[in-house]
Length: 69
Ligand SMILES: [Zn+2]
Figure 1 (tube, protein in one colour):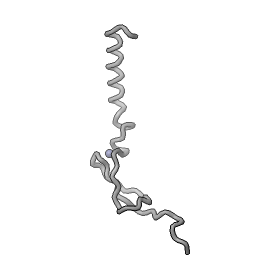
Figure 2: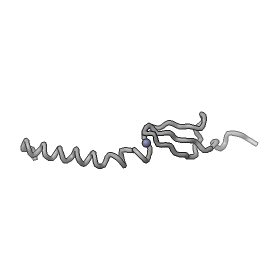
Figure 3: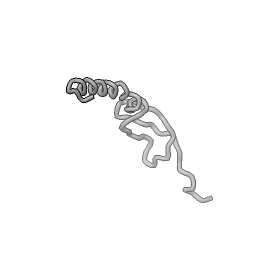
Figure 4: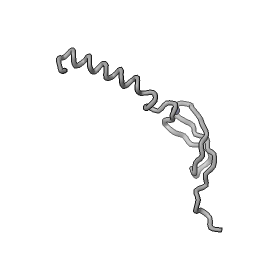
């Protein structure tokens, strides 16, 4: 039997910078832990919407104040 044709998928623990941890399956070669900067719990796609909207709101006020719109 040849080896190395299929990646060695195994359960790994993903540790996010936000402190969230979850398990997934990966061919990650080193150890059984992966450190990531963002996860579905803190990804800007989920957490940034409100912030982006408030910044846009400020932008509108700014434009009105200076007569740019
Ligand atoms: Zn996270």
